[in-house]
Image (cartoon, rainbow, N blue to C red; front, side, top):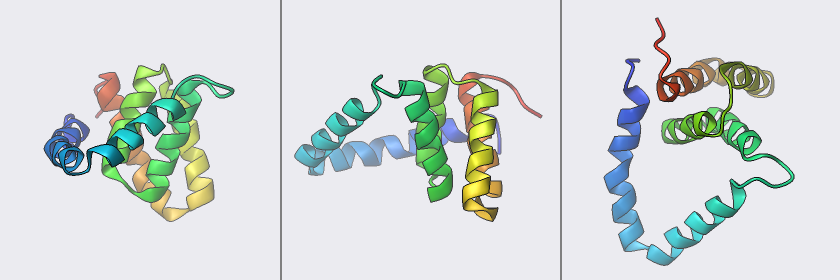
Length: 118
């Protein structure tokens, strides 16, 4: 993966998402409201919620979700150590697939954080 892989995934999904929003505006508005209500601070801080969402993205093997929630983790102040430890939980709970998708999630986090990696 190159240093802009997950940015391109988000770019590639932008227009299809807009087309879907135009085709089913009420459904997508409902989803946006659900997302907004879910990812605000509550009993769980928003950062924790983003870490949970990134863990689910790893277990669901969804590049678009990995990109969105790795970016969310960066925006909410999650550290690389927190992301790495969360990925350890996904490996424990999801086994082999998490050893493939976990590194992808960490790479996405680093990409959005702006930390160059070898």
